[in-house]
Image 1 (cartoon, one colour):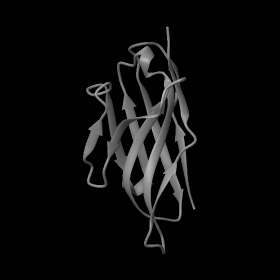
Image 2 (image 1 turned 30 degrees about the vertical axis):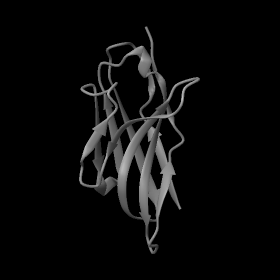
Image 3 (image 1 turned 135 degrees about the vertical axis):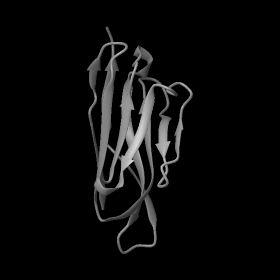
Length: 121
């Protein structure tokens, strides 16, 4: 099986920055897409940013120009660099990876447990 562990969340003031990390471990042959989602209280989970195996990226309009997603394939890790944070960015952030398992022709989707990001003065 595969486990995803996020880190890097915390409490920051508006305008500050945070960098989230998500490390995948387990029987991994290859990771396709890596995505970051977030869910604020009372709202649905939404896609924040995604990066393909070819490093093509996409972003929600609300974070374009402020957030940057990247990946380190050697470390099975996804990053989300967040700048100019706003109170409306407050949410639990989850990583999501499409993983090709060793010894299997199948691709499975895995989620991390989430990391809290709070932006408040």
